[in-house]
Length: 225
Ligand SMILES: [Mg+2]
Image (cartoon, rainbow, N blue to C red; front, top):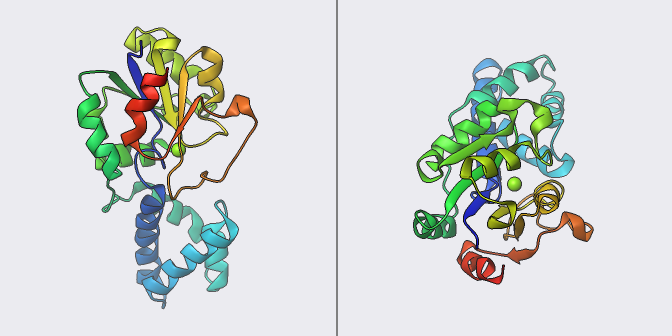
């Protein structure tokens, strides 16, 4: 019998690109106030670079494009991480389904990434009020990021459930399911219309037991276990 549901955050409960855009707006306002450049032009270029080059060098490449000093990157990263996202919403299907889950299951969350960023997202989305046990792995060190077993084991212990009584629900086959499966937990992959990993396919041990496209299918998935 399933007693605990443990969720991933980014691109599982909300659309991560919305957070990225909000951060880009904050960074673009800073640049526009400092240099003779419109925030809109800088913002649009950030989005183009992200789209064409992927993550990692977005700020560097955009600064270089406008001939601005590369030394601004550090400040930009700082602004990005500390900005308060103003536009974040849970996916509507998440909001609908969560109300019914509370009380019937123990609810947990495991998320990787800079801890200031992840906690800002969690608070902006109101997840700290919906989910009883939340682990931002970076609070314990970057080596505790998924697929480390650290957070999975910690939540199983806090919930006092066996692995087979718990389900991990996430979107990224590179790191969300492999350890959960190895520990004996059930796994569900959500493949939404948009998201960074929707097209990623890996070998079976990295994939989930069950796949859904919306949280409305969660109950059916849980019954299959
Ligand atoms: Mg994710």
